[in-house]
Image (tube, rainbow, N blue to C red; front, side, top):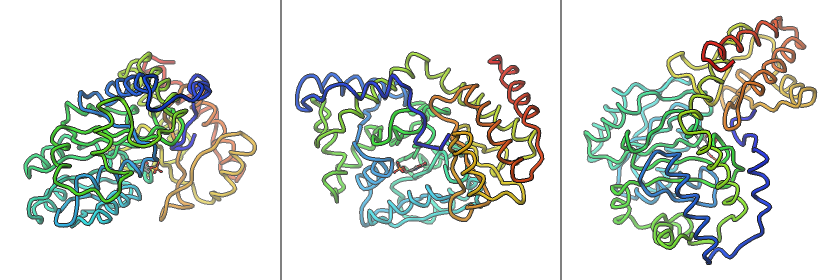
Length: 378
Ligand SMILES: Cc1ncc(COP(=O)(O)O)c(C=O)c1O
């Protein structure tokens, strides 16, 4: 129940047993095209989607350094650890970076973003994190942010690493120029691949930027993609796994996958409310994929999570940075379903009670089930 990597279905694990193939042959071209099609369904786009053998950060660095360089300016709003890393990627690329901030647990107001854009001469991009995994905040203003980007003629870049597949993000409808997703989150594949969609406008912007790293040069990936290949040796077992994971999403249907994530998150939030455990983010921007919850007074983070792990076999994450010891985070992604929600809630209630807190686990589970029932899923 970590906010990534998440549980990987057996079908996906088994796909990795496929014998290794020639990555410069027709078998790989078939695999590449199949993964590409699955990605387009996931991103809801007709844009090209590239697949890099790298973690999420590799995809972020590749995207940023392919469109930005010294002399360029960019706005990257910061409201947690991963948006801060996104801003850092822009600084690494040599771009002049303006970062409006917001208190942890909230997302910046679009007006603040616009003010930051106004300060710059021709901002080349507006880069945002859609789901801030460190605080459990989903920034629900993407269309307003896109309108701001458009007003300044800037590219709109979205780090959707911990949310694509788990919440609404129709790339084409929203007009996202670059969208980045990680294999190890809502897609329920193992870690190690990052998916990057590129609009034609983003491709054109790349033409005038001199790449700083050959491994992260998206121009090279585009060239090799024409013949269904990657420029460097791909992580073949992960490609087979991703193909299967995307097939599962297609079988379920994107709408249903997104709805399942929403209802599991809703059930979690209503059970936590029954337990008296409060979410860290504001109500308006609570994530459907990462639940960041405040510890009730007196609960020791290390002891709590060790008990969950050792007695209940449930792994959750602690708070990030300034929130360490103050919050815990539950990943509600990928394979997430009613039984995983129930099991996690019982374990959390018992582990809290073990440290002297008083909550009724049956009450909590009933609230979750009531929520599933109201949504027609119980
Ligand atoms: C929103 C977001 N961006 C970037 C990353 C970095 O991804 P990775 O750790 O796979 O490099 C993460 C990882 O959790 C994330 O949640």
